[in-house]
Image (cartoon, rainbow, N blue to C red):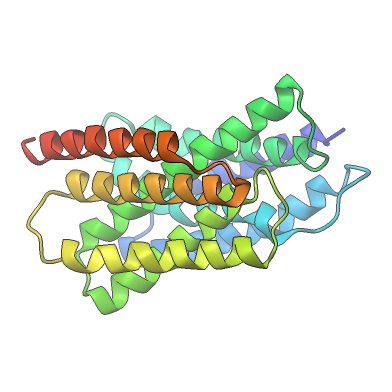
Length: 248
């Protein structure tokens, strides 16, 4: 059984650290986030080690570390608005849920708890992708700077999504690398396309969702015409949403 008290202490410490981040300058936030990511990477194996079947796996660090890295910047963005409390307390609660979900999937089963854990990790991965895309696209750095960041974030998140239902073999890692490079290539023309931050972030998220979804189907051997139609429909609906966002 996962030590819930220690996990709760970690979430509380993380939340207090986010509250402190609101007093820091924007330039310090990436370094502060990196420190929190290191804390998450140390805490996850320590907490998951309580599972009798646990063996260290780097992919289990991806989502908690990605959350910790982005949380100070997100909290700062929300700090001046009505969602200030969500920016401070939300990431801590999500970190608790992510680590607990990773614990449930150490020995995968097909019960309701495991299915709920996969769902939480999946939704969190896409939410983190959107958060990173919005943060990176808002800065509007040159492609030579922003493209590697998009590639790293997309590749890491894609790897965790692709390994939720299977072990990480060479083919899975190659697919994750391909996903990262594809997202970096997509960012290049977007940097020359005049659109709002929300529309740019949503368009990147749509591309990431479709790309990873197709890769998951290819890895499981379930890719077919029906699946192609399904993702084509999702792409069309998503483009309509992005078009609507450009009008906001």
